[in-house]
Image 1: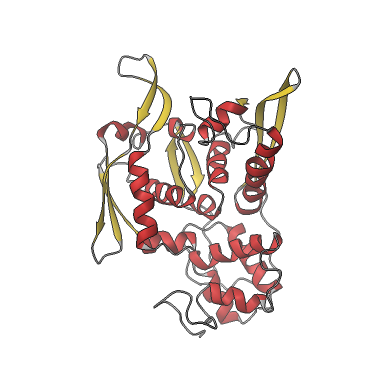
Image 2: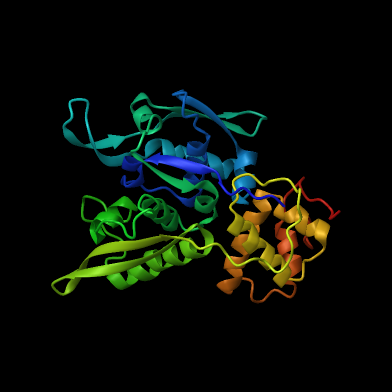
Length: 332
């Protein structure tokens, strides 16, 4: 199988990377996928995205109600960022990205129109941008891990990020506001619920390996630095990838290898079935998520892990009917 050595890349203005805003996991999926669709040479304000194409990359199924609620909230939330105005003065800006979002009836497509002030943060970014792998960002299930992944991606060519005040990082992640309301006020809780979860997911599922150091000011922890390095390529899988198979868009080699390793571990070794699974970006994403859930004990009580995985992939029917209506197929 041929796998892209250059997975689909997203470019995001650095001001948006460290902006203060709070999106859910689904909202971040929509936002990142939308960013990946922008045509660099055309500063159009209107773009359409395919829900099916996004689903194939994320390995998730999005229903109409879920998406509608997600995009409705996206339209009302602003990005707060530090930038310069037209006169070169430093300003703290509140920015709304979306003017309207249309659901095109019967097509499974969303039509998004950006506001005019958002255009400079979406196009002609030159050197002032953060690049990250779309597939990696979509695989992360923690909304905080998604944001921390993009922040660390900005410094992936360095050994560490600049020093963040813990309160500042919480504001970026939407965990603290200007009125003094703050979630996870105890550092131990912030570590357990946010930082450690993000580090684990990023190290297991993305092209980066990160860690963090906390720094005290007196007796209290006040600052934080993320260490960042590019992820080493996973060890070769214990089977031969089939040559000539179609490329799954947006995938890195290590993501396919990790999925292949899981299949071998579960005894799913029929060549045609393995090829079919690894040729699909959605299947590879689902396999990697399944492997993560397996490590965390989520599937520990299942009698047949291979059967459960094939059911999740829509290849095998669940006992109560197909998991994905209209998409379940029999193995060939």
